[in-house]
Image (cartoon, rainbow, N blue to C red; front, top):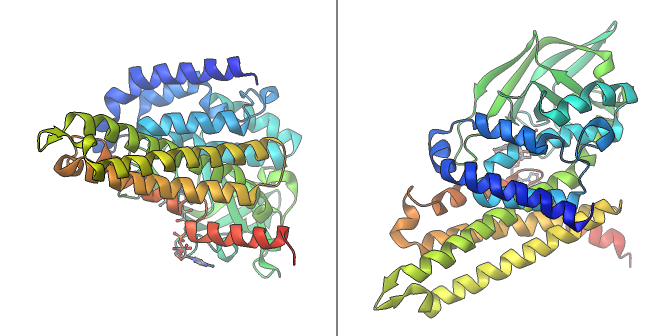
Length: 381
Ligand SMILES: Cc1cc2nc3c(=O)[nH]c(=O)nc-3n(C[C@H](O)[C@H](O)[C@H](O)COP(=O)(O)OP(=O)(O)OC[C@H]3O[C@@H](n4cnc5c(N)ncnc54)[C@H](O)[C@@H]3O)c2cc1C
């Protein structure tokens, strides 16, 4: 992808954001309403196929361009990126590990947005320790029969197909060898049990999914071989972390931009608050965090696009950018004074949205552990 093509895509998205999203985001988020008409435009923009290879109907964008798109959208309304992020990680599992038949069957429908979904990994009693999942798939003739519960699944209500992580051999040692990933389409035995209420990240549905004697054709086992599911789930995490980091960049930038604007119009003691040193210190720190986060995301995305192992780089970007979003959003609330606590300004939304980035795609506690382990592995004594 050359620079002109990238600029063209980013410009089209910028126009859509200013025309359709910015004027409506606050109202939709307050009502926690799914942005149906925005989803239609997202289909037209090709966002549901952003990183799907062109031969299967996607845009085939590199991670570096994709990260810019995610940051740009998150700067206006972060929730929107959740509607296609985990959907694209599901698609990446198919394009990286699926059989040719699975690619031909699913990827064009994912790319057009006709079939949308996400990732179903987490369960009520385990998230970080994925190898402890209990959802079980048992082979029965040409099918597998699935029983279990998944929770916190983004797009769980509006989506219709999910990359579902299960145990095909619960006694396997090591545990990951007994895990498999399927493409699970909604049908008999697969139901949404509840919509989960959240602090932020409104507008996008997060749900608990229940599988009761749900029959899955064996042809939906990604790659056609049992025991690779943990590898497939982990394989999507590098891109997933770059995505979350890019969201962090967007929210951190939004908090900075709103603060720079507000601090020039709000006056105390006869001058705009941006002329008080205490506020300048905050703005200086916020701007530096934005720039550092952006550079870390760029560097991780570049390594990913070059096909290099980048768990350390993606971990650093995810950790730093999500903490930058959290710190910048609380500083923005402080800079806005009482208005920062009001729902009439966007900064309170950034403050409610930011913590999610510290939790999703591997918590920030785990990111630091991953960074340290890689550091030691790459620098043996
Ligand atoms: C809004 C939202 C959307 C989500 N979307 C999805 C989705 O689409 N699909 C999906 O599958 N999941 C999704 N999740 C789930 C998310 O991935 C998990 O919440 C996350 O992985 C953490 O798992 P947990 O909540 O079980 O926390 P736990 O694993 O119980 O962790 C609790 C705490 O212990 C810490 N901890 C755990 N193990 C260690 C360790 N070894 N060392 C140090 N600290 C440790 C953690 O960092 C954390 O602070 C979503 C969650 C939210 C809130």
